[in-house]
Image: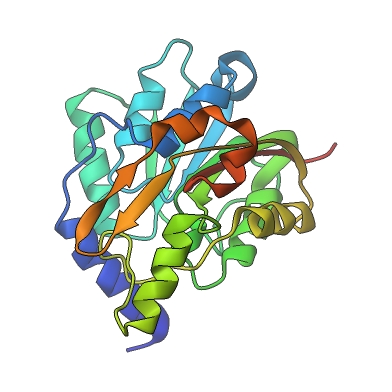
Length: 241
């Protein structure tokens, strides 16, 4: 079995074990919604959500005021896509197109989307920078990318280092690929892919404890400079005209 086939099989098994996130109210979802301009990014636009998972956020976007006329929801896992489509069908959301795609090689024409959304995706890819180049390629000039990914510049990164020293692998809810992402480097990668950075935001300051869930410290979120240390990072970028 090839490496790609192995990864696909592991993600199929991972998605089979999880249900649709019907609320789609994770910190990264809230960051995207905070920066979405309905008129500019959704209304009348062609939208692609890369690595849509089991479809909860795609469905949420289509139930907002002035949803896009067409949203393509794509994921590497056919199991995830199948669950997402069933969920959308239950809600009678017929304007979502469901596709099995690799974020590192999107099967769409150049400049075919107005908006690309990528939530918690590139940290789980073998070649994250290849995916960023693909996002740039399929966006129209002046199109916008909404991207979230973890940022291990703060205490959670130190915790990952501690686990490595102890010989214990770190995973995000059991996912097979978990790249060590740093917000400044992610910003640099997006710029090198050809984008202009419009905004950087973040949320979630946590104090990790071995053997226990991390404790969130919400008061740190009120200190704007500390966003560079928050776990949930967000970048809004635009493809130049």
